[in-house]
Amino acid sequence: MRWVIAGGGTGGHLFPALALSRKILARGGKVLLVGCGRRVEELALAEAPFPVATISGEGWLGRSAWQKMRALWRLSRGVKEALSLIREFAADIVFGTGGYASFPALVAGKILRKKLGLHEQNAVPGLTNRLCGRLVHRVFVSFPGTEGYFPGRRVILSGNPVREEILSPRPREHAGPGLLVLGGSQGARSLNRLLTGTAGDLFSRFPDLYLLHQTGERDEKWVRETYREKGLRVEVRAFIRDMAWAYAQADLVVSRAGATTVAELCALGKPAIYIPFPYATHAHQEKNAQVVVSAGGGVMLKEGTFSPPEFVERISSLLSAPEKLQTMGRKARRLFRPQAAETIIQEMEAMAHA
Image 1 (cartoon, rainbow, N blue to C red):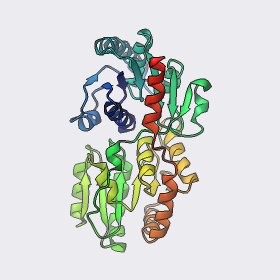
Image 2 (cartoon, rainbow, N blue to C red; image 1 turned 180 degrees about the horizontal axis):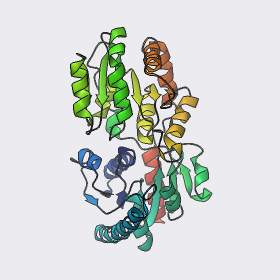
Image 3 (cartoon, rainbow, N blue to C red; image 1 turned 180 degrees about the vertical axis):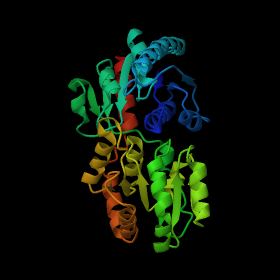
Image 4 (cartoon, helix red, strand yellow; image 1 turned 45 degrees about the vertical axis):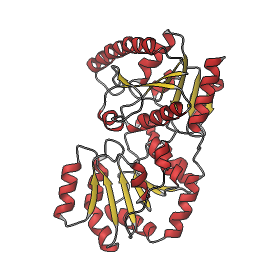
C-alpha cells in the first residue's frame, strides 16, 4: 500500500506523521512524507528512511487581508504541487496530520479520488482540521471528547502515534534529581526567561540537580550565556534529536502542552508541570493539559497566574517527593494508547482494499 502523508511545520504535526510512516514501512508499505520545508522538518527528517517532498502552504487565521490573499495563492499552488506528487507516487491513501501541507494535500487527494484520512492530535481541533474532517473518509482523534467536532460516523478514537524510538530504554547519566524543560520544537521564550531567572534558586535547594533545557534555536545563545554568567551547570540544547535519552534523564518535566509532547510524556509515564501556550488557537494546549491533570498525571500552571517564587516552590515540592512523582507517572501512563498507529493503518488500508 502506498501512502502520501502530509504534515509538518511544528513537531506536534510532524512527529505523529513520522511515527506513522515508520510503522507503515515496517509493514512493507511505501511512504512519501510531504511538508512545507520548515526548519523542524529539516532537523527531524535529515535521515528519514523514506522520500520527503515539500509543497506550498501558509496560515490563514490572524492574518491581514493582503496576507490572506497570499495564503490563498500559496494554497492553490500547493494543491497543484500535491496533485503532481500524488500522481507521480501513485498513492493509494492520502493522510493528513495537520500543518500547512495537510490541507492542500487532502484537497488534491479528494480531486484524485483517493482514500483520505486525517489525524487530530489536540483535544480541540483548529478550523483547518474541522474543514478537512468534511473532506476525508476517516478522522482519527487522540483524546476522548474530540469526536464531537467531526462528522460522527467518520471518527475513531485512536490515540496519538508515538515514535517507537521514544520508547527505547536509555541509561540515566546523572545521580541527582533530573529536570527537563521543553518549549516545543521551536522553543518558548517565556519558559526560557522563567528558567534562567529561577534556576539559581533551584540549584540552591538541589545542588546535585541535573537541568536539561531545550530552548529552540533563536534563544539558545543567550540562554546558554545567562547560565554561564551565573555559574550554573545546565545542559542547554536548541533542539534535542534523541528525546528518548532526554526523557530518561528526567524525574520531572516542565513543558508546553502540545499534543505530541503530552502523548510522549504519557507513553513514558513522566510526571509534568504543564505551562500551556496562552495564545494557542481555541486554548487547545490548555485542554490537552487538562486531560492529563484530570487523570492525576500532571500539574498545570497557567502563564501569567504565578510568580517565579511560586514556580520554584512547586518544582521543589515535587522533586522532594519521589513517591508522588511515581504515582503521577503511573496515572499519566494509563492515558497512553500504544496501538494508535496500528489502528490508523488497519482502518485506512481496509478501506483502500474494499
